[in-house]
Image 1 (cartoon, rainbow, N blue to C red):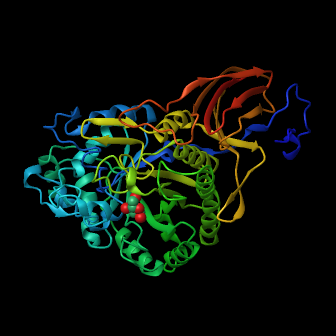
Image 2: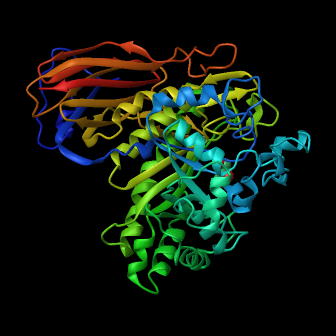
Length: 535
Ligand code: AHR
């Protein structure tokens, strides 16, 4: 590739004469904060779907599999490296058919109910009595809160708008948040083992209400949202309502909801804490998670990179009504979604074995959230275990971390930092796909600062070429104590599985500092974290 200095592209900087030619330049502006990186941008999502809850998280108290009160211990232990973030439950589409009352009281007396996904795809091959098809409700509100406490996550409950009235929503809030002994439902909570309130702050009002959540129009949904949030028992914690937002680029849904919600009064905007955008970049090629071409990989990354324009477009439309931008975006479902042919168990609906390609998607997406930290208040990857962009694979006593998990672990260093403006300058990659010429970003990333500690994460999307990168921090006297961690593989198809659980994992990398400049090589198909002290 043509080697040149990219500094000229950055306003106010002249090209510097470099001792060694570089392919890429990363310029960090520590005095230009762009938002605070909430740990909630690294949030998670679990649904009663396939192998997510039963098998993935809930193995039961009497299981031979190591567990803490029925919750898979390996998941709990692994989550500790990811920081304290947020967990969304019970769906997804499942949420709009779920009655929270089925999941309280003595476990053996809870009803067994047909799961929303009962007859979907590979589940048709599974026995009807399997918990993925007929849910025994062993994992209910108490178990979910216990899971959140074990991993220090904030609970985010998604309420049923399609098939239950607003009263049931108010009752769930009462059950979770009313002070000890204050109401009949608070006493039932105590009988279920939790005298003290759960203090749940985040409440989703429906899920995908344009689809499985009721097939509503945005106008109809705005009425439901108003009704569900017109009153609620408020105790101790604020209630942050998250409204069911659009599917991908559906700007009409956003425009219509925002204009309808203020029909009665502009003050109603204050009821909407978050506007939930769902975007799956899907799959490419044959749809197989393990069998794909280089061009399929590039095209998947290109599709994932659309997240950026979706955030900007919806943000702009929201601003037509919400001029002060009181409402923030919540990307509460995202990920690459391949066919489930490589799933590790028959009941793992939407499960597949993810590769380094999916790690590139995860890193690129988290960097996008960091760069838009002023717009996105929360983002939840779909889903935690055995599903879509999964962080873990689990089947019986077998368990492993996926490459996506390692991206979350590396990126944790950004949590609670101040995001700062950063330019990642490198030419795009051109490739041929579906009969045409396409381009995908070659280098992307984000940067953040906490006091004098600088954190930079970057992705080299090229499957063939390393990137010689120079990192420059104008305004700093010196960069000290540089460190790098690198997640890369020799083959984009590399993955972890039960036979080889550690094939893909981060390693220490090399980075050198000289004055206010860092230099390092980003290997092909790599995710890199660089840390240094600003002097
Ligand atoms: O994450 C799987 C499903 O995808 C969710 O249930 C739904 O909200 C979305 O369509």
